[in-house]
Amino acid sequence: MPPRLPPSRPAVAPAPTFSPAAVPQPVFMPAAPAAAIAPPPVAKPVAKPAAVAPLPQRVRLRFAIIRGDQGFVVGRSEHRWTLEGAAYTLRAVTETTGLAALFKPAKVAQVSEGDLVAEGLRPHNFRVERSGAVGDTASFDWAAGRVAMNPGPRDASTEPGMQDMLSMFWQLGLMPVSPTGMAVTVATGKKIERFVFALVGEEKIATALGERTALHLKTVGTAGGDATEVWIGVEKRLPLRIRHVDRKGEVFDQIVDELEME
Image (cartoon, rainbow, N blue to C red; front, side):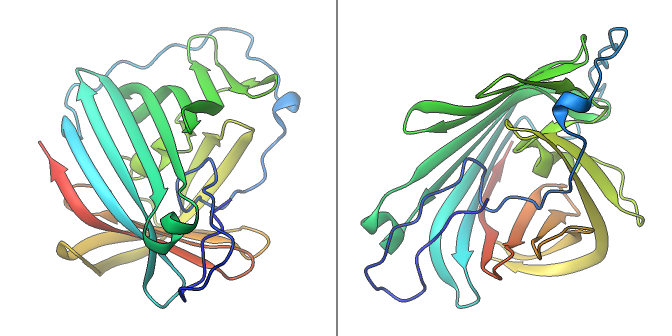
C-alpha cells in the first residue's frame, strides 16, 4: 500500500509512514494462492547471462514524491543500480522530507540482488529494511523452481520472468513492448501477485532534467479503483515517473529530478 502522507497545507497532523514497498506501489491483480501452486516435478534450468548488458554499470535515479495535484513535495526516493559482470544490486531508499520529516521522519529501504540475463532481471534475493531491521523478504531458487517468502512459511513456484517489488519497475524497461499489454508476476515478500500494464503510448514528460520522451504504461483490469502508471524513458529505458492513485483517489507521484550513470 502507498504511504499515508501529510496534507498539502502545513498543519500539525499525524505523520506519514512508508509502506514496505517503494512509493507508490503497483496495483495488484489476484493470482492463485501460493499454497495452491504445486511444486514442479523437475528442476528448471537457469538462464545464461546476457551477452551484452542492456543497462549501464552504475545508475543513480532520484525522484521527488508529490502528494495530490497541488505539487506538495512530501518525500524522495533514490534508486541505485550496480552491475558487476552479470550480477546486479538494486537499492531504493524512500524517505519523508520537509514538514513530513519534521513531524515524524520515516525511511524505508528495498534491496534486490540477482543476475542480468538474456530475458532481463532475474532476482535471487529481495528484502525490505526499516530502521535497520529486515522486514519482508523473498528468496528465489531458480534451479529448484521455488521462491520462499518471509515473514511466515510462504513458499511458491517460480515463473519465467518473475520479479520482486523493486526489480519490477526496472524490468518493464527491458521487456519487449507489446500493444496488447505487458504482464509481470511478482513475489512481494508476502504473496504472489500478477500485474498487467497496457501501453498508453509514447509521450513527452516534463522533468527537472528537461523534457523527456517516455513510454506510458498503465495497470489494467484492477478492482477497487487503484491505478498505477509508469513512464519508461525511450532512450535509456529507465523509469522516469511512477504515479499511483489509490482506491480513495489519493495521488502519489514520483518524478525523476536527478540522473547519473556510467
